[in-house]
Amino acid sequence: ACKLDTDKFLVAYTNPALGTEVMCVVGTISGTTITLGTPQLVDTTAGGTSQISIWASQIDTNKAIITYMAVVSGTPTSKTVALTVSGTVATIGTPVSLNASLSDSFNRSVKIAADKFAVMNKNYLQVGTISGTTITLGTAVQIFTTGGAGSELIDSVIVSPDTNVVVVAENVGSTVYKAV
Image (cartoon, rainbow, N blue to C red; front, side, top):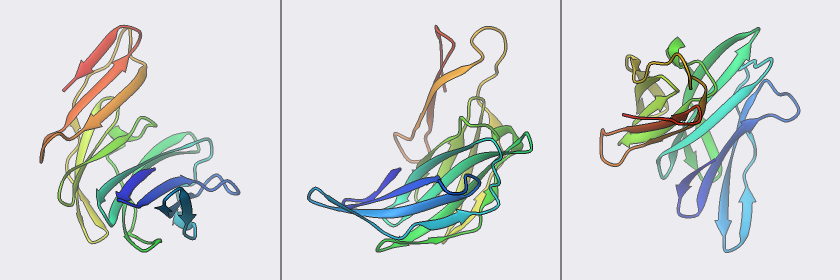
């Protein structure tokens, strides 16, 4: 889930009736009352046969991205899609595939500038720009190397404290912490 406006949010999830579809719904809050819009299909081609991991990030008060990973026949594939929101209706763009190095369930994303975001996993980072609901991706770069003790990711965080600045931190193993 992610905040959109002061009274609006987006939830991205796996269709409970058909676990191979990525869905989203926009909600509004008035006092203590939550009102959800109509659930919308984001991607029928996610095709996750064993799991789908989903992450949503606000880009603006009426724009967000959804990043997700699906395992299809044992092969993980990660995608991201931009959407704009009017009321509780999302206009969803065409999903684009992230670099294969980002195809795992540890993907996280953050807005880094107007219509610009970064997606990271436990080792790589890729930046994207948005025009309307169209995403253009840059080249993935390696931010961490793994191997040896502590190569299992426990937790990760990506934040953007300033325009075009990304801070990535992760906890691998019981005592290893990394930051870039």
